[in-house]
Length: 408
Image 1 (cartoon, rainbow, N blue to C red):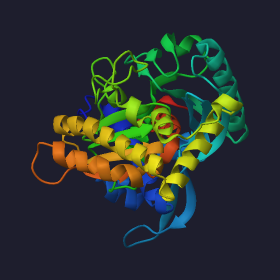
Image 2: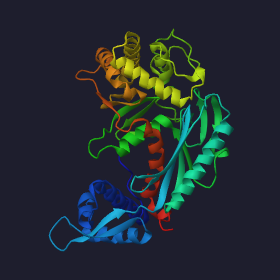
Image 3: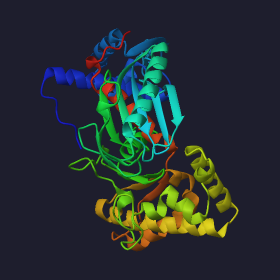
Image 4: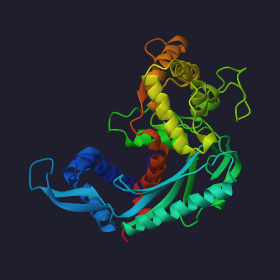
């Protein structure tokens, strides 16, 4: 979707400042960049870019690193880079069995982080969010010690979030209903709450190698449940109420077992982590003093080890999970016609055994002629929701730098 044209000189200036920051960020993945290179990248004159750069240097968003290549003839100009001080984004993740928080600077580097292994399933939301608030405070303090100042907090949750609010309407795997995170978290930072799959998909869109990340894709990931998000033409599809992408609760066998959402035969009942481990006969250890996430991680490693060894029960469970994924995704592919289907989380780890049955179902069930969408595995892995949350704050700063004070 094309961005609307700016309707004032101030908006034009704001947009051009943002374009300079993004150009420095993109080119800076391979090192510092010159004013001339920025001008060539965004299509403005060198004089215009120089004026914008000076403003951003004075505000503390850019730093000059000394003479560098200008990208053309003439005297070398000062090389530019985004500052590693000033505003940063705080991202947080509420998992079913863990809490995590990190701070990301304007260069996209993780500068601080905390993680707590917990059992949040059916836990009191106030207690869970109180602990998350403690982790946020610690990361904010760590970021401050590194010369950073948080510009906002974004939280990824495994549930439905009402669009434009901080309220989790329903999170079946947590047992939460109508929970407003703003009522429980520290109020000093602007707060954004989003479904974890959406933040995971945005991380794939934003952090992939420039020019290679797909702009039309379905991102499917698994923790205890299955989350999915849809990106079309580089934009996240949220739906009218913000509930788009609930692939995990799409029924693949309508007469199947009851799901936590209240339906029957949902995809999660066949391809979610818990269902897959149960079908493969792998014990998570939670019933014998296991540590929740530690037990799950060990169980997934055991599942992979057994699959590599050719264990019949594991291979059959993975085959059935791949079939269920293919059935659910075929409907989404027929409806949306994406370029790519991207597997993340535990699905990425188990992709070698899931892909054959998944692809076969897609080929049999996709209505459009020609090849099915590309099947790919996430390079970000399980960190996607947390990084997507933190980077969403960073991008707000870069989209409107004059609204933030970069200097200490």
